[in-house]
Length: 210
Length: 210
DNA sequence: CCTTTCCGCTAACACTGTTAGCTAACGTAA
DNA sequence: TTACGTTAGCTAACAGTGTTAGCGGAAAGG
Image 1 (spheres, chains in turn red, brown, blue, purple):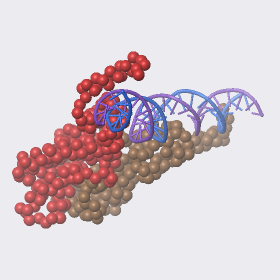
Image 2 (cartoon, rainbow over the protein chains, first blue to last red):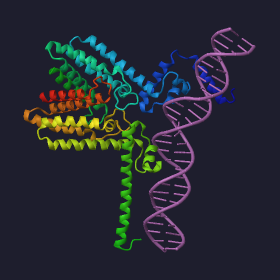
Image 3 (cartoon, helix red, strand yellow):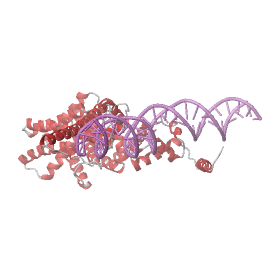
Image 4 (cartoon, each protein chain N blue to C red):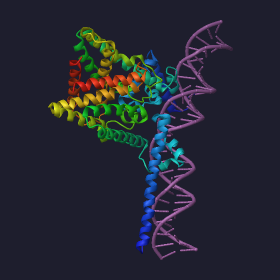
């Protein structure tokens, strides 16, 4: 029973909402959550803000996700899938493994700075959505792509298995480490061109020694 | 009104005591906060938990810290100072710059895994206590120590300035990157001995090419 | 028509960070 | 001693958080 103008307006909002209702609620929640994270950072994401944005009440969200952490976790998986797609594109585009390694490093760099919110969710230490309990096979996407390229190079040069493993982790580490250091924005190298140059030089030096 | 030197000294004593007590409270809060972070992780640190632990009411904490973020920020600074002390010890212990680089990498590794809570606060992406707004000169401690050692090596081999800069960032990145990857515990290299071996091999390969 | 299912809501619980404002104890001066 | 000003440390509130129990009404099935 409607008892006031306020309640009537509210119910009209709900009615309008039902008219332009979209099919999948889950994807809507994810999209809205991503936008909120992009706008205000993952720290200020709240269930109520999502509920407001999707124009549903709070408990509806819990019909699709176990909890807030779960939403952030799914978002990070989306991030991994997005990165994976660009890596696979590069894999097809560069048959030469040396060129491919350069392309992978570039792709990782570009991904991180074009999608800092994803990068934080995916690789942030002590993130609510990651850690020992939350194992993501997707986490190793970048390593696996590097590994393939380095193995291809190793076959020509007859290097052994463990050598390939070490080189793979070394490459992954140097690229990931540099990007996360720069992302913390505490480095006093402020010129982003300079930062990218450091990456390029380092990658080049690494490749030369393969 | 003060009428004699004796009374003045007495009042100074009271003032000093008050200052001492105030500082004492601050360090007590920090100690308790650190313990709580160690026990339950920074995510579950709360002002009320700190208040309970120090057996004072909540607003007392705000006499010593602007907000919760400030407490985490100060904790991270303590972490940097702790790391700095061990780096300086290594600096004195290893006159040979090659040996010193190895020691620095070891120290960084040990620091991270002995004090994961500090490491998270210091280097966690998207941490409430770090980021663009919060500039910490202490952040560059590790880089500066590496830089000195690499410069010393470069002088013997007549390398130029920019080469030193690149090598410094490359070394920092590879050590930091590997540690943070392992700390995320999503890697499928589960044997920690194996992980350390990857670091050692990578560091060795890096040093060989200096 | 009545009954059953179930969608989406309200309202609550137990927390969180933060602060306004009071009380009581303290040091100081008369 | 008494009176006064300072201030330390308190209570209680505000506005927010994640999460869930339980209800109402609409739709579906008979």
